[in-house]
Image (cartoon, rainbow, N blue to C red; front, side, top):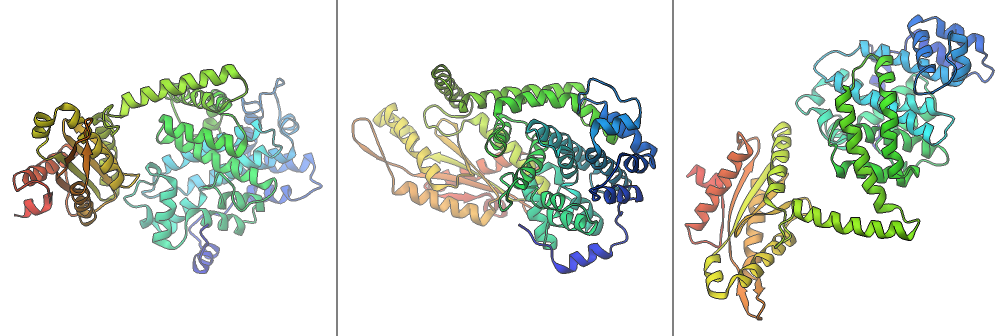
Length: 506
């Protein structure tokens, strides 16, 4: 967990260009710390800001609480919500109002508040699902978990320049902040809340907001921290990749850390559909239109329901269904993303991955390398030994490539006797090392045919890297460059690798 350096802590204490909680918020916070608080004092504090009083009324009558009796005045709303919940919600509204007024500059505040308010709504729903009495405190903690990002943007605006922080993984944001200023927004946010004398549980939840396991936190506080962290994970799924893998991952986290089954989490996507308009109105933020919302809900329910069939084991009938679904899904997965002969990824999967990785690399100036691989004299093997021998060589080469590369790299059969390798994060020098390693591994390998004969293997490679020095306009241009490098290898003796930069320079 990142620790905040003393010089940054001192700057937070003396900073004058970042907003402090308004007087209403400080009065609410003072009342919340008084064990002998009474209804009259709470009503007086909330009434001091008519806008906040109106929001308390609306939320008491909203789908977040689903009360049968409508509150027609502030006193009834206070009784409906309870004193502690009223104070916590009032504090949420006053803090957000102050912070939104401070939103200036090039930082994407629309994206920030969208994630923030989604997280708050999810935190409240998860806490209510668990029957926790502190659902409003979790609502506030989820709302403020990324407060430190506002501070970073205010004090070190250069940190987020050019990286689009809400379009990359949150863990990467923390690492980038750590590299730039020696700490991250979790530690800065929790430190600022401490300076504001916010409750210790809130400070701790913000500090641990990227760890759904709640590691290092004990007792009932662990569940509090887990709910807050998972609220952010759920928001990221909605705002970012809403694919089956991301949805199932968050379903696994909810099951493991909160004991919320995937099927139930899928049902909760329906529940939050009614609560999001409440959050949008309260914080004056448009999150989604109805069509987008319905698409997300359907995708989530489908992915989580399938995930649930993988995990439930209560009875024999369900086990049989589970086994059948596993077989069907396995076959479907192979058909969709794998080449049936070599078990390498297929061309469609590769092209989708290339488009995604190319966009990411271009945005963040990260290197991306691509390697075309062609089997030498493959037609002669097919003609001399038969197609079964050719198939054996193709399978052997696919396995050789997988064994030689990292798990994060992509090995795909591009067509015929051509393979292609996608190497995210590798620069020219590192990609050349991969080329050398692949060629050497091939020379020492043999493919075994069905009749027991051994066939030697050599490969020709074309390597290209896209980075800050070598830029390409599109994935198609990158592919063309790799193909040109491969052509050079084939025409200069085969059994070698060629880097596109070398032939371009020549």
